[in-house]
Length: 270
Image (cartoon, rainbow, N blue to C red; front, side, top):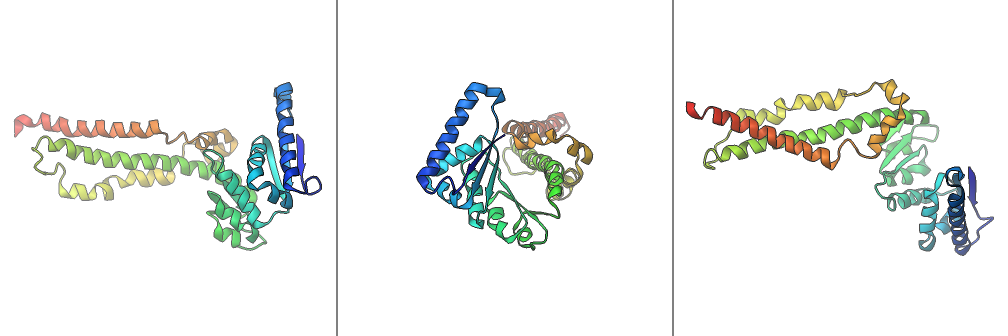
């Protein structure tokens, strides 16, 4: 790995920062064209004063472009506001970005609050980061379980629950819609009043509780052993436009069948 160091010893002003970023980008392009598969990955190291220069409007885009080609970016001796600005820069300029910040002290609070997801580590530096975070863990090593196991489980469950809620409500509404054609739009209800009131409260609550709490497609140990199972969540494959509209289509089809078939089957018995 080739290390790229940008600090006050190399850059004293905005112009020098812009030139160094341009030079490193051009060098990477040349190396990639020559070696391609064997091109060394980059690691960027930048300090606080230089980051302040690189965050200005004329240099910011080049800094972001350089970070895209780096395997790792290390910002050292930065202020809490600079930590927040780094997260803001990535969050608002990367397409479909979901930023997560992890911190254990009061100086990490702005960064944690700026990210989409904030994780606080309860440690020796107090509880400020934990109080400002979305999720709290006791040690950094628990982040693996938080993402690969609980995060993955939660994403799959929520994807199902969202689709199921649309399904069950459309199922009920479409049934009344089709029944309206059979009663000359008189306003007569297809379901009894008790069934309507208990539909969401009782009849369709159990699947939400069972699947929303205990659903597991793989075991805890398997989710940790095979991190590639986390990839569908990164690409949002569990709830796509195609799967959503398939749920809607199934709800309409099943609702029309459950409504029209009994009506036509009993039409000679009325």
